[in-house]
Structure formats: structure tokens, C-alpha cells
Length: 244
Image (tube, rainbow, N blue to C red; front, side, top):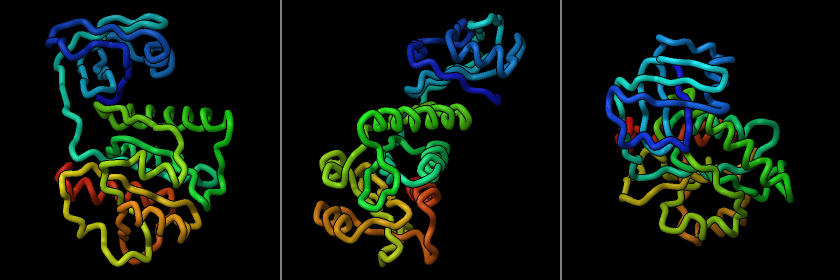
């Protein structure tokens, strides 16, 4: 089962094995003309909302394919929820973090305009950047065959983070923190992992977020890049929360 195709407009929840599921548009075109999917192959179709249909391709066209469902899998949204607050970073380091975090099971992503972020999303660039991250998330979901498509939220400033993350347990990844992430005891709240840019989280930001209830935690004795810190922390939490 090497391929997953997403169509958020499909209503897959009420389907039963033996039903015919049709995929159209760009996803079908990519499957047929790029991936060369042919009748007789097996693949998955998802709605991005927790439902995966697996089955055998029965028909293909230029922008159309149909599969006969062998099984319909319904996956509940994981709880507690994990949100990655990823600071904008230069080059493609923030995009690498978003891609890996999605493959590892993150539930939502918030782009963060941190004080030390070299990259800036201003004006039309904010919408363009968000759409770029959303496309990366979508492809990572398909590659990892995930049932849920994590949303990419609008960019947030440091001042906006406490309000945007209200009710969540904010964990600031900070190399100088004394508390290891591995010692965090889950308390039932959804989690927000806050990852700074290349230069780290600025002291004033640490103070402001700590005053809002955030906890500083560290991953280990080494200092990780912004592209690897979030995914590494998600892997730790997956094990800690029993998701793995």
C-alpha cells in the first residue's frame, strides 16, 4: 500500500467494503499520469478527517480513477493534541521541520514570527508562505499515509501566542532549561511545542511566554537545529503519550 491520495470533498465515513470510490481532479491526474497507477493496483484514498479507504483500482482516466473498497478505516483524532509552533527560519530549515513533524504525527502547525527569525512573512508573503507550508504538510501526510491532515494556522507573533494557544500546555524547547522533556508528566491538556529560530528564543520572549504559563524544557545535552528540534520532541512525546 504505497500510495495515499487525498480528497477532502469526499464523504467516506459511511462507506462499506465493496463500495466504489471515485477520485477526480488533480489527485486523480497525478495518480494516473505521474504515478502511472493502473487497474489492479492497490492504493488508499483519504478525506483528511480520519477516514482511509483501501482497495483495488478498477478504472482509470486522464483525471479520474475508481477503487473498490476492501476496507474502511476510521481513526479517532489523537488526544492529547500536539501543535508545533515553528519559528520562521532561513533557507528551508523551517520547511524541513514542518515536513518531518507531519510525518511524525503532529496535529497542527502554527508559523511563528519570532524576534530572531531571519525570514519574514509580511503582506502577501504571509499567505504565500502559509500555502507553501500547507502543501508540504499535504505531501507529507500522503507519503506517511496518515488519516488526518494537520491544519497550518495563520502566522502568529510572540504577543499573539498565549491567546492562540489558550488552554494548551506550552512547552518551550530551550537548551538551557533544567527540566528534560522526557520527565514531563502528561496532565490531559493538549500540548504546544514552541521551537525558536536559528538564534534561539530571545530572552524577552522567554520571559513573556513564561509569564503566560509556558514551561521551558530541553531535549538533551546537545543543541539541535531548528529543523530537527521540533521533530525530535514530537518523537519523544509520541513515546511518552503512548502514541507509539
